[in-house]
Amino acid sequence: MAKFPAAESRLFKGKFVCRRCKSVIRSTNMKIISEEVTCRRCGSHAFKGKRKK
Image (cartoon, rainbow, N blue to C red; front, top):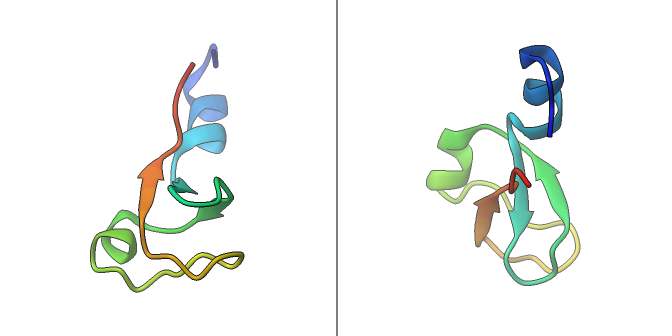
């Protein structure tokens, strides 16, 4: 999708999608793994990385 590294990092680096309500949240990997981040919409702690199509 992205043709150069700067665009790819801007689109995908540090973005995670809530597994329940599909809202996108930007955070670090360590905070997602240790479950310090909650979803703004539903309050869930379950996230996955943003998919590269």
